[in-house]
Image (cartoon, rainbow, N blue to C red; front, top):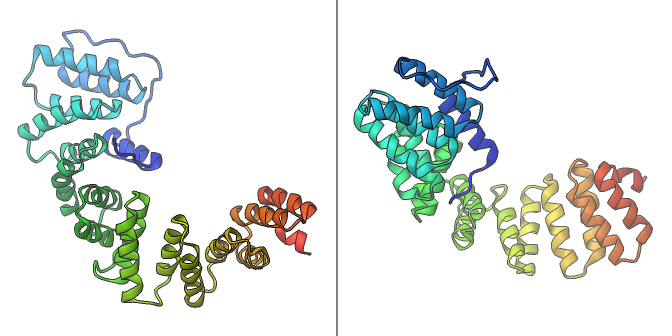
Length: 313
């Protein structure tokens, strides 16, 4: 199953399914009597879902389905309940019925796309997510991100680039379009294609910030240290104010035991950005390798407090 960032999943669950409704009564809701109206059953099931009582909500809706299987809106409610529970394939079955019942049901379209995606079937998610994107004059960022990931998983990299370019509001064939897609490809562990796209970004605009940095990170990850150093140096020449590049270059030098160079670069990284903990931690390791144990301990402590400047002074 494809992973989704927790913050994004929480947002989607809240914005799409819950529709901003609040739980006003945290007490358990009793099962509705058979004489209750379908609308009251829907409300009761929604309250149970918001309380995390997924099985109880689904049971109520299934009971209603047994007595009135063609009730309008029931398939959508069941699909949303299965979606919240995380039973995405059952959600798909119900939501497809909801779509057949009402092709204009936009909520079902969104949930169908997300359910297919979260069930690990990105190719089947794409048509629904494309439809969602067509509703907005500008890119819906969450939908564009998921659609782009589905294209990556389906190995349609050109369409992935178009989706991410639309998400970031840049031309698909620009250096930015290739670089942003390369970042997403790397996140999904499509390393060879990520390298190809990062190289393309650097070729289109050799002075575009971030292209050489990403290439350096890729080469460092693959232990191609000399190539990584070359790319980090190119990045510094076009973007000398990026603290992260000094940190990455220091990491590369530390791997070939050039500790003096690494220490010098780490100091620059920390001077530019005293809030990042990574350079402090690496500084401690570098100082330890140099035999400066007391300073190494103090650097490690500053990694938590983010105050290396006090050591220097």
